[in-house]
Length: 370
Image 1 (cartoon, rainbow, N blue to C red):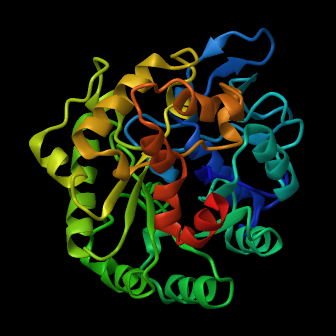
Image 2: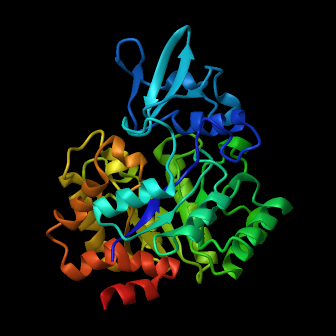
């Protein structure tokens, strides 16, 4: 059974997507593409450009986002206008004529790629996702498991704690996606701040797996990334019975700049903790640099297997976003077909069994194996 631990359904981005207003949703999207792995172009001639006109130097919070008439276009593009010139980021695949990813669309993709089950992650750019993830899960329980989405920067507020209760008790969501980017509220509190203890206690009390995505904020450099990784390590050590998945895996740019992992000892110690799993997900970040079947990624997977063991690695795609670089099937196949150094049992772990254990799908995998 193949389980994708990182996929998305979402409603039309031309609307509010569950946010209080379209403006709030667009702020999330603009912040997401200030430093994208996706390509950006000048609209009139297709010339490649950088996206530094989307933010003010030295301010990586929402307050630093520039007024560039940021907007959602068609064919996977997010448009903006700077000094009278139109530009766009090719954020979703060109074939996405409208910015929508329905459950039916994802099921068709899964059948074609031979993926059995998807764990639906979330995040502000996709929308306020709890109800839609829950709807998708309830309509297709054998196909989807939904995660909770909250506003992480204010996770100490009563309304956020109440939303966690609703998402677990009423919506029956299976875990939480925690995006570490605190840019909406500034960077004064990290994820392990004492103010957030009630939130993390609640997550631990519900025994929810945490799919936690780390960023190199606030300065987008290696010291920022390592500081956030230290905070993550402190959190994981505090909640030893809670399962944490490191979404996107370790940063290749900061920890493998020469093509091989260069983990400091303290990072290595954190990654080896028995309540941490690592997402194997390279095409979405490096598919614009590396070519399929990604031998560079295969080398990094081999090194993680050797250091951590296959039991700690979990495959994910970031579908449908990843199709701006490769097909969904290719995103599976670079591991399924081309990581020849993995045994059949190790591939079973990485491509399904480990995700099943995280989200509580052991029963489904047992049935599939019969």
